[in-house]
Picture 1 (cartoon, one colour):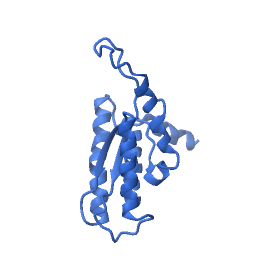
Picture 2: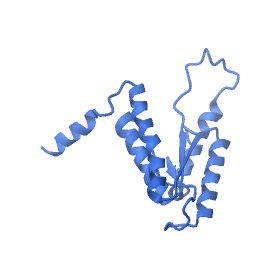
Picture 3: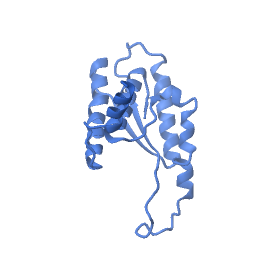
Length: 163
């Protein structure tokens, strides 16, 4: 889960936290610039391109034991709707990097979902990047029969820390 701008990276980290807490899903999050320095290698790893390379395209899907765990990339894009925002890098660099990562994922058979910010102000764009992912984390928890409000590991950690 990577954000294409500083604002989108905040939303990506929040989405990762809500998926971890609510749905108990492991997530790697960060800014797209950080991903390009090493984490992009995950696309070639055992849950990325290597898993796709080992797939038997002639296997009967009804007789297979199901696909193993696969990597899925969620790319949160700011969209450059407000060019006056203070940003670490020019908008054009962020957009090219986001396009490049999306292309890399598609070439390796890694599913890539893109959420693009909407709105004019930074607050509106952040809200648009956070609202649906927050709902998705709750829905995913419920789909797996989990109570997203009761996280036993967090309660136990607090108890152990207070001893």
